[in-house]
Image (cartoon, rainbow, N blue to C red; front, top):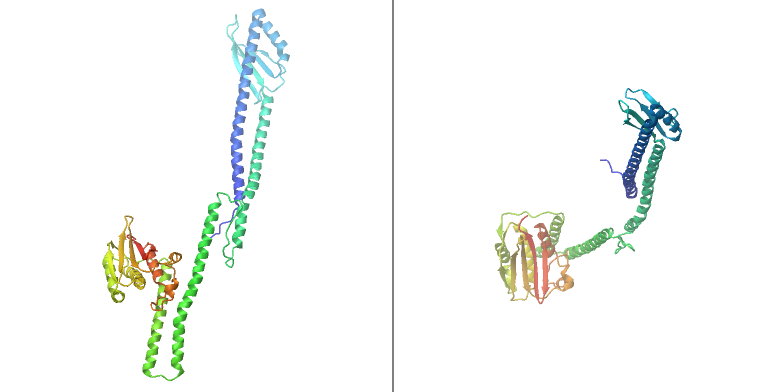
Length: 446
């Protein structure tokens, strides 16, 4: 595949503006030249008319006084007083009666303007034919000089416009060069760097804002990735340390078969915890790659909620909690995934709900084809500074992290968010006045 060649915006704009200037000047000056040529033509026609009228009057007046001989003498006498003109007189049979003998120009040249007309004379059987020619060489030379001047003006104007545009564009593109230098200087080891200009142009403002917003998102993602790596190490280090410690203690002296079985059972629990973390991380990785939910036949979400509630029957009884389901919707979803998300939400609600209270599961559909599933519980409110990170991976408030009686590795709500994305939905969370509502939405149609 051929790599496209780079081009200079300044040069391209300069060439385009130069061409535009040449075309514009050409049209304008061509109009001026055409108008000038038309004025010269009208001037020549007027001069020819005046000269033809004058010669016809001379011939008629002289003929009335002395006949043809007087006409010929008069014409010969006035020849020297008519520079730049030529006169020819013929009778009806085409015989030349008079012709200027020494015209000061070529009467057959392209720059000569002729006119033929008839002169009626009393006593003559037929009118005489006259031909006058006007010398327009001087005006033609002026027209040629004007044409060259126009061409030179067009080319000069185009060159000046191109050079001026190139210089102006280079000056105006300096902010872009500064932005390029600032972009090149951005380094991951120096967070917080942003593009800025002392006087940003209106056209560059969206670019700067979008780039700075992108940098903010990248830094946030990078920080989350660093935190995620630390959390993964923290979550895996504890069970691994437990496995190593128990194994070392078991190998420190002889053990009975029952004692070894107890150690192996404890190790199996830790291994299962590690496997659960790895499986959840693999699931989140698939969701991040854009995997979509496999929707099946439409199902009643109220029935799905009832099945999840039955699964949590034992912990609900231990916490003396009851569940109330409000609303219903029949939607085509990936039923196992929706059950998993609801189970995570219900597990969190059971963990922090006040004993003896009622958990509410709401199924809410809107006209836009989005169905929401929200779990509400009464209990300690979530701090406002934690709300924005509630669905982050391995995020847990300090109180949750320190509760040894409720072990969980902090990926439950992240999985809820991933399942919502796989169904083209979103998450929601609100907590105030001792009431917490956490849920997700799914698009009714894929």
